Image (cartoon, rainbow, N blue to C red; front, side, top):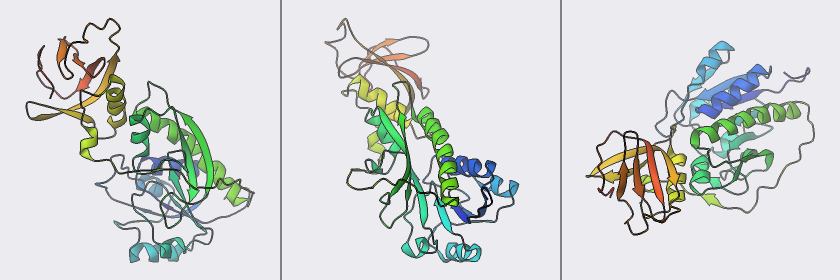
Length: 301
């Protein structure tokens, strides 16, 4: 409840952003009438149990595997919410569920909609070396990430950022956004919506997208590693028929061109703390990686 105005919100989510945004709402005195979540998820590397918040604030909740199943429908009907918030749920929502909310449903996408819809927005932004992304809240429609944009804040991406730091920035900004947006909705204030038309859509990544090809530029390898570092699955290369995960690297620019005549993938230096590998143009210093014995002159292919 905000300034005496009550809006019944039903909340859906099961990842880190779900937890952080729910926590922000509750800390600001906003009422949540019910929560739908999961006990675990094999699809979300940033899965987080949000039921501790439910228990702390005495909010009814249920676990489901499929948001579109009858259990969800009956739960929503029981609490007759005005609006639904669905943040961090890797599944399209059927129209019969969306239509249960008189004021519709709001979703979240950490990208600059209408561009960059689709899967793995934090990963792709870093892999592609983008300098900016955004934190976007939008009306949920039948087609993913296609509804009107209700709130959007630009987020700068610095060279030093990785998946973890970029996620933290997005969650900090998103937590403030959703509280501000909710207060406006509670008061029926006019919201300047942004049309969500045109733009591109990112595909679902697969395991081969995380394979380091040493013929790539050092910048491309750096971007790949920082994009897939924790909480994600890690980039990898193959050495002696074994998959080696890489979590942190440093790009070494070969100004002297000393290694110009060496093939990509060749190990040029091994010291006590790291390994230096020739890339398509410069060197990559491996700083954090799976335990493995690699010697000077070997090839990481």
